[in-house]
Amino acid sequence: MTKRIFFSSLIFIISCYCKKADDIKLSEEELFLCGIMGYQEPQYPGGDSSLSVFFNEHFNIDSLPDSLLKKKRLTVKFSVDTIGITNVLEIIDSYSPLIDTELTRVFSILKPWTPGIVAGKKAVYVLRQPISFVLEE
Image (cartoon, rainbow, N blue to C red; front, side):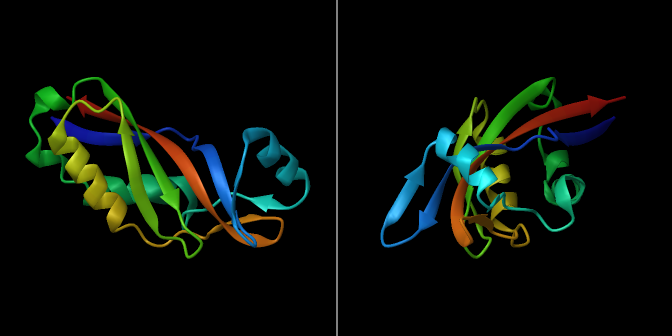
């Protein structure tokens, strides 16, 4: 039986923080306007496919019982800071401390991302990444 992790091709931006005189949190409407005025989402080196490959190579899925992986989906809320480092903020729809610990470990060893940009300046972004675990026979 093969165990794999599937990433949604969509990463949802929740918010971003722009470094100005003070940290300013931008709403979804302001993010939309920033898209018109020079905003760029954080990017993982090599894109979404490289992120998926990295997780499948580094997530210790074989140590988890099959019962934890059957048709399970969760979402990781994480930040990408102004130097590209990720930090897990929350695991949404968490159902196993074992999976949470392993997800947090793998996020902590990701290669640095290209930071997001808002109005020409690097910004801290908070993102959501849907993740599914699949057992294939």
